[in-house]
Length: 408
Image (cartoon, rainbow, N blue to C red; front, side, top):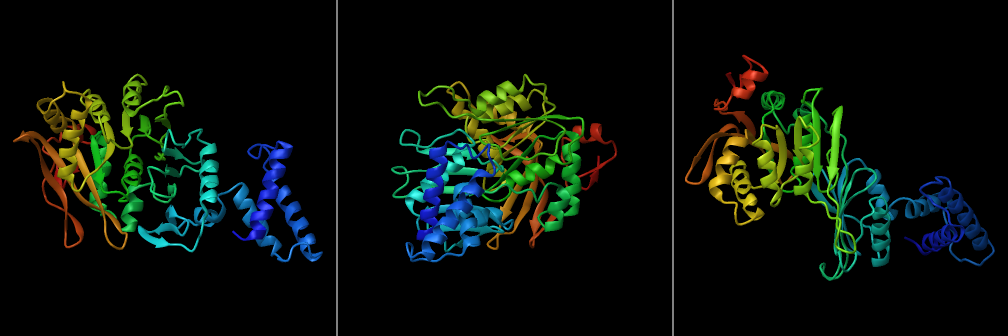
């Protein structure tokens, strides 16, 4: 940001505060004030008061972005090829394109970063301060914001913005991108219709949320779907949809609404299918209890492989309390989860389905047994020839349909 842009931006903000204008209600005020202040600055420059001439049109765009948008970051918000933006420090502003990180030329001062974060948080009503040094919030366009401030962060505010992407909404789109084979897509589509309880696993940035969106594009039109997330990220094309998100505690430490609470409340809302954005802790127990009651569901989990995902899902419920032990959890996972879809990302940023496994319903030595239905061979996802041992759901949904390459 040049000195001229900074000066004009400060003048526009001063006018907004002095005149008590609500920019969220008056959409023309920011543009009007900006044009007036840019014109005044240019007149003073011509008179010799300011030594720095300006490009008026470019300055208007920069000031408007600083007032109503996200300043120097706005071009990356507008660029559909940018997936994520993060700030590590004044000269360390990164973006990701197609899964690959790039260091930008943007330089932001600590004050500019704080002002940007405050503007981003206005819509959500959430806060970040010394008493609450982390914040997770949704931006108006659906992008996800995460912030950590000192002294949790070392010297500067750490800001991550995962942009909301609308490009991939179906399994067909994933096939077109090479992330999934047509045969695997057909199988997953049949699994969704059959109400198979599906666990989507993978590392960070592998496209787990995108996969959930794509899977749900195959759901029946008449299903009532409840989604539960820490912050809104899912964008399901479902007619009968209720979306719920967690709430942070107030300054007094009250009013928090957790994932566990939302899962319990969702069961009173007549769901036909339950979608949990991600399980990380004890809420996995409540999800398993819901799935064990016959309610179809899906969720994501961070894991290194499909089998590791099953192991992790057997471990997380133990965080719910001492009265929960593996003798209950492991058989429940084996009986509830029908499929695990594991995703990966390579060095070039290519995201793809790496394997699809189906728990058999049996356990061995305290672990859930599972059969591989699709595995990656020479970089290509191929069927193994096995089919889910528990094919009852598929048979009821579509009698005679091929499941995992074998007729059910």
